[in-house]
Length: 295
Length: 275
Image (tube, rainbow over all chains, first blue to last red; front, side):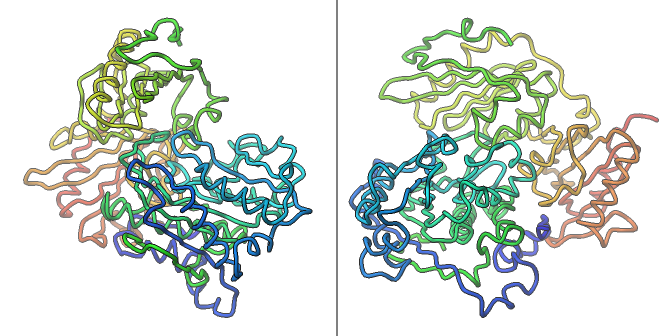
């Protein structure tokens, strides 16, 4: 059961509490003091995106290295990647190919480089989106890496790492009702269960608004120049949502702070127990450029 | 749906059709759009014709023509996300920042560029004008709109829809379906303007029968306005008034009225059919 959110919660100014701190229900945060926390790295670099919106490959590769190294408290990025991938692994990297805002090739290249450095064989690495269910590497995969851009979504509120696995579902249609509330179920499909090792939410140029379904305008993306990285997709998406809400509050006003309520993030925690959406249980580590950080 | 692939010019100014045209129906719409399909399926959507145009500098324009089954349904999908000013093409249209939205008869059309600029403005509008002659005559609005009080109604801000998906994108009320909306319900959401009486919003929902309306009325009161249990009227957190009433198979809610009197006046002015 989700905590119902109403317009009156907005008016009371308790939205953030209901979506964030109190997502697990009243008192949830207070009862979790001893529980392990999910580490999320937010890393930004002023040169990650050029004035012409081009992506700076070396800078982005360095950001990913620094984020993953810090995530695993390792001394270098190769050791960090080796914590979850090695010569015996078959790795599916779930990307997103939405034409207007796909997973940047520069991020994909950085992932590939470090997987190879960690000893994964070239032929055992595949990047895919729409055909993951039939892709031979994904079918045999031992681990999956989740990487996609952050954007708003007309039904789900936010498209993030949780939503990115919808392509593993036998029926996408079945997952869309009730604001896509049960998207986290995809992480428990046989092809996916227990394999998700790393979630990279690309906030290089996030989209914070759309005018109707299926709409994209460069007016509603901004050069945030960040990556949000973690092992817990729920915690990663919770930070992404917080960022989108902050940007919408600035650009669209308090009344439009929230896109359609992203129930699926809260329910990924409270119904599916995939991870945590409770800020009290998220260790957010911020690295790099801080101007306009918003969260 | 007519053979738009044959009817619509492949060249409009400096822009030329690129790639293969496509048509999607209710079953295949998910193949075309991620997450937007439900919004169309909540209406009586039949098919969509899709074409891309390529233009100078590698820029792209997309053209979507949705057959919504009836003029009322086309009005509905058109009315739900109006943000831009009217542009005067076809029965109803808006344009802003590379996005043309238009309805004509049973058709809803979207011409979109991710880019902006005077060249984009001209090209997007030119594509829209090139398609318009092939969409047939205008059609009537949903009859439910006739129940709205005319005084102070903000033209161009009324939305017609069926499901909570549309309500929550238009005017967020609750994260659960507390109005029990679905394919058989009809809703209008209207904004009332400035003037001396002040602004207010009106949601009017038509259910299949009075029992459905009563169930929704009780659900809304319990979930949203418990302090209005006896009167249906309450002052909410921002100091404005919410007033819910049921009348036969209808439920009407006034949101954000500046006074209890304004909420009552607006409720009393709804043009319910005589029973």
